[in-house]
Image 1: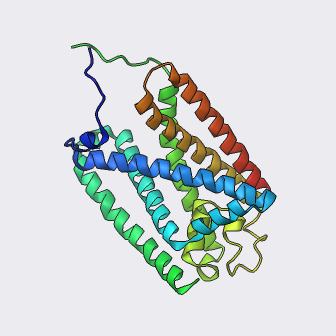
Image 2: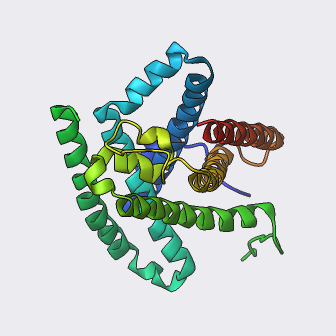
Image 3: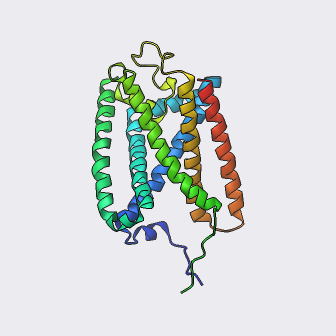
Length: 129
Length: 139
């Protein structure tokens, strides 16, 4: 007999999962976010190619804005580097006792890479390519 | 202690688990390959970082048309890059739709609506694949 799994979202957030749980949540959120972006971008490109529609033009204006690109590059960089950590821990499960160190290493890699991308995106965005 | 029920052999979920890892690694490698090729072809002096990023995420010539590349059709807009784009699109869309399936199944569970969910996601997968391959070949 299993216990009920019906837990509210905010109640679930209070679970003491720590950074591994938050990393898992962020991986899912960024994953779905990337899928939404890619899906809409594909459809907008198709409409632009075939019909030159206004919807496609307005979507592309959003995508080409530097603010959007700053957000989406975080999604992609985080999802890719976190995915690499998951892949490494799946190939070598004996490394799972170093979970916390792996998470620290991951952020130490993500922050400079993302910081560099943001610096160039903002500087070209504010000065106008 | 009751033993956990594990599906023997190669089940759908086990194959998708393997495919997710494989496709994720393939996407990263394809992106790195694209970025390296761009730098070899002269991107350092021909375009700014956002254009390099756009090419890295998806090597489509429309991503680099507003740059200082002298002729986009030489080296940037050819069948080789179309094939790379199709590979990225296949791995990416499959990886993404499978991820969506995993997240949705965590909320929906093993009820009668699971085949409905899988059917809808299958159609979404096919739709996105067809539209993106069309866009690639018509670019």
